Image (cartoon, rainbow, N blue to C red):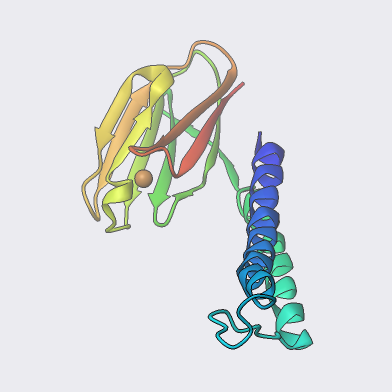
Length: 173
Ligand SMILES: [Cu+2]
């Protein structure tokens, strides 16, 4: 799933790079075809890019691809095991530019309480959705909003912001 995302976004970046390269060649074409007939007026001036500009564009593109791989694979590996208090498995999840931790490990057949502490002002993260448990809850800023459910079957249950941009996982064992 994550690997697939990385591959797709890397190809998208490469496509963008190629797109920039081909646009430049296309823009040069009218000048070359017209030059035989109307040699005086040239609307399209050939701009010769210095080699270091080409190298810099390529390097920054590769840098972005590297950043994506880091973002998808390394920055999302934080997981936390829920601690049981009075039979309820509890974890506090800080909402600030994403979910921290973004992976919560719980046991099946035992009530779960996730305490969402929303620190992020952006409206993007004002709602959290658990599709598998039919929960859509608004989160108040700088407050803890508990969300309770009891997972019956082991598995991976995702939760996300209202627009499905930021995601987390409840791993039920
Ligand atoms: Cu969002």
